[in-house]
Image 1 (cartoon, rainbow, N blue to C red):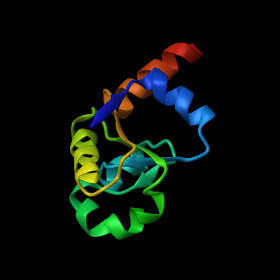
Image 2 (cartoon, rainbow, N blue to C red):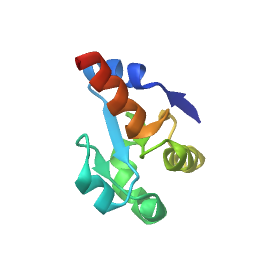
Image 3 (cartoon, rainbow, N blue to C red):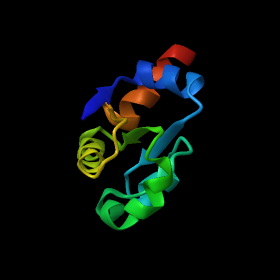
Image 4 (cartoon, rainbow, N blue to C red):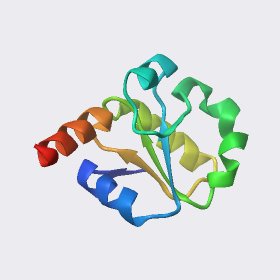
Length: 104
């Protein structure tokens, strides 16, 4: 499992047309703040693998709030045959902090 920094993620978002972003937080967390990713909570990932099958050949970035759950999700997807899976280092919290700093 590889990690991607918030800066690398921002570049990837603007340069890749085959990018799938998966938010593995709970639905209530997603409702509070999100970046438009697919919301597939970590605990439901095993039963939603078929749903993700169509993304098998795209680059996948998993994220959560701080990066811990997304690491687990990325490892799980890797063990199940997904090859281009990354975890957002520091999670949404680090990404939003970095993005806000660049905007301000």
